[in-house]
Length: 587
Ligand SMILES: Cc1ncc(COP(=O)(O)O)c(C=O)c1O
Image 1 (cartoon, rainbow, N blue to C red):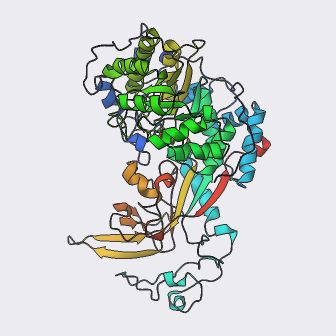
Image 2 (image 1 turned 90 degrees about the vertical axis):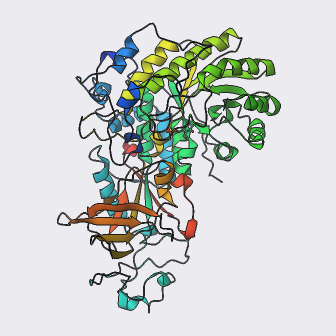
Image 3 (image 1 turned 120 degrees about the vertical axis):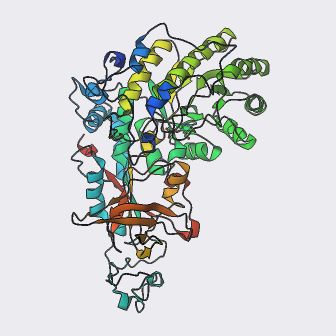
């Protein structure tokens, strides 16, 4: 059960220097299209490809309700961005005292004293240690922080250094995990000293110095939140809890004034029981719900919920009389890393029939939602979906529904992608926001009574996390073709946080903690800890030479990692350290 945060979430004060007045269609940016970067799943798609496609849903040409087309050419102009003057990031800070997202976050906190106080309370609760972040570059920052924390599990000191010869005679409770000989199936002749003994603990459940560990930079959540509000002053973020349901992240989003997107009664009960938000600030964004979950939502007053089919409408009619139903529409998410429209979302051509059925049943429809797919920065997908939403608003309003909500879902990148090695181009969050914002202002203007929300998950949870892992075993294999494969074993893998390699199509950016500039690269495989052969995190890649006792890490590792991890084979990464890369105490 999460600990209660004793605060009521206050409405946000006005942001510092919002960029809502900027019209991105008039400001061509050079970062128009995304790059293929190594570690972010959002970088593996190609926007150029998606822009070439026709925008109909799965090739279906609408027959009953026409897609909404804008009278203005500004959006088309925004789609046609060319190599230009300033990046969207430079635009965002032009004329502002803040030169970076971190500066901006500090300014934003200064102008929101109540939020500042709540954020401080969370940082204190987790005893977050301040680490100065010299640049916005992630890898060097994480390397510095992790190097400082390595070998300090629970800030206990190592008790002994075991050599292979003494390991079998030692009396530590975990010693049975250490090999009695130095052979380790290794065909090399070197004997590697076993690193410092796991610290003496009273319980096997306590993390040891050689266990893998996470570091959570809670200030990253603040930076991302302030950036979100700067780029989308009219949008209320509903954090998608599924992305990472760790209490510190949820508590920080709550302290910042965020709302929540919950997929199940497990999630909304957690938010409500912990006092992280009230029921009216939750969207139960699952279009196909179990009856007992609907009953629970009804009991707890979580009435705002999505649907995309007739049976769901009938369930809402029976089980949630006060439902405020939001019609989830399908999107063109073929450019996304994780597509959802194959599973959820009503095709545009069927939306009128659903609205008619809702009218017959007396279910209240209040809005439209969509999700362009996780890791999708395709402007075309947003363009089509927002125009479809407008069209459905018109149809529904004509039928007598009071339409008040547009939910643009998630899909925003969690960190800045690397520029494409060939074109040098990339799509930043600011670019996507710069496209969406004026379109929403045009089709759902301020003062129209329409509430705008989003459901970002990856955007908030990715960059605050890094995982650090020790290499604990190794062997060298000779392949049939005569090439060598250096195999290493570490303590978190596909059944734990690295499940993202399967479910989130992630390609983790594995780094050596203390790189040796002299180290040669070798054909390397790194396995996770379980007995399953699929449990590898790197397979036959050129990688700097490693040895037992070396540490490796993955930066930006909080999205769809810990949330879906298991304790298969009994392996769990338990050690967590909290830090703050913003000096919030002096804000
Ligand atoms: C309904 C819904 N909203 C929001 C999200 C969060 O998406 P992302 O992490 O890409 O922002 C998801 C992801 O599965 C989702 O299914």
